[in-house]
Length: 307
View: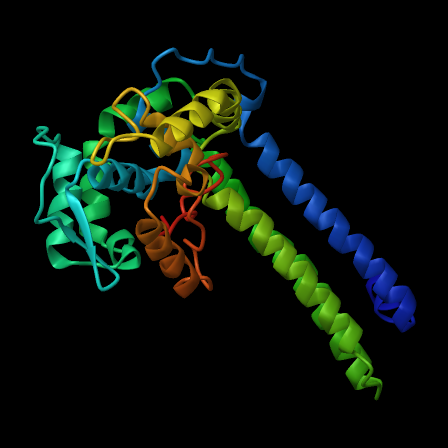
């Protein structure tokens, strides 16, 4: 009888009730997802004096952020050219530095002259870089910096159960209203759609999360500690000799953590505009940002590619 009486509520009263149910559903989903990450209560790690660029790139944005970081390094070393909006192996002078396996693999992928979006969408490249990053990933796991599997699983469960509640209640009221001969249901449909979208956004972000709560705090601490170093490097980049690298091996981690958008002055306008165009072209999907690094909230964030 309670269910029938709820469905029999007048429109405004039911909408108020539905808003409360939606808020409760979203709130519980958030709390359950939060509780699935036990690293939140762990002691914070100290900021390293020599941060690992590849490990931080992986923690900030997964495999695609590793590729972004390597691509930046290859570009500043003279290995990457741009022609007609496509990346390619440069034909001119190069640094002569011996490339490691990861950099060599990214450079090999440029033989096909991909756009940034095509490069990040290359499954073979992503799989190879993932494999080559196994040592860094293992260290991140050992330090509880990567999101526990339970976070994604809890988010998936929350989405299913929450959708059943939100859509089930709305559909039941919609059916009851139409059967009663009423047709003013636009507000109910709009509210149900909005609630479902918010639920999807909340759980989708959690499912794609790379860094754990501890990992996110670790990245934030590194950004606070090295923000001045980034400013100094950018200042040096503006006055560096032609052909000189803006970021050496010891400072490449700044690219990993702060991303392309923070590197104005260290990247040529042609390089930046190419990635912005790719981001614009893919704005309807993951990968619509060139930031690349930050809070480790997801692997989709960058320059035409997503995880």
